[in-house]
Image 1 (cartoon, rainbow, N blue to C red):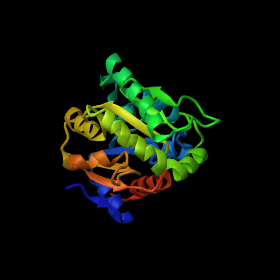
Image 2 (image 1 turned 60 degrees about the vertical axis):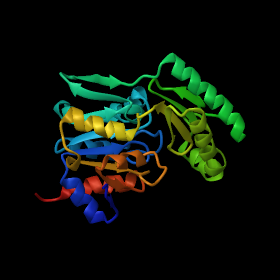
Image 3 (image 1 turned 45 degrees about the vertical axis):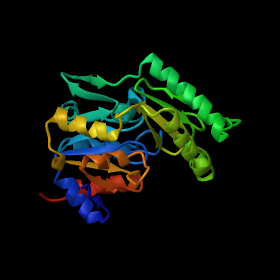
Length: 268
């Protein structure tokens, strides 16, 4: 069974004993849809010198690049220890021969996209969602392997998303997810971040991503730990627990930073 670690020292000890550390992105390494901080980027590079590290989140590859990858200044050889799994494990990138290489991508077909978009249109009417007067980017975004609804738009400020989440999460988003699940029994439908609902092919979730890490990196479950802010039931990291790997629940990127700092400062 997967173990949820709560004590700070236990988190660091568990972190230390693994061959592969997998991080969620939004809410774990960065604030939602926000560029990684300079301090976190520096810590991440230092971590890559010691461990194989993967990052898995709901955004697509361009978003990973803008929000995280482009802000890293690691020694080039370190990137061979870094693996990216955008769209919740729906695609996988590795760094080989000086370039980022797409290993796989579970792209939605045109027919699947049409079906999902139609379901969103019908479900949003059903739950009474009204487009806000001010939105920040697209409300519905096609990410190739995933289609995502964001109540305030893809580029909404964190403060606005937090406010919307408090006021509407139960009233709209949870109802939207349940409504979509009824309309799309052959797909995965889950809540992501603070304002989003994501849809992927059946079986494509963060558990799938973990299993692909096991397969492609040739490691055992016991060699992996997953760090995320939403491992609770219904959270966008909760699928990971199906795999049986160890997990570390964090409150936010500040707690993640402390865990990495404490690990790096440990004497061998």
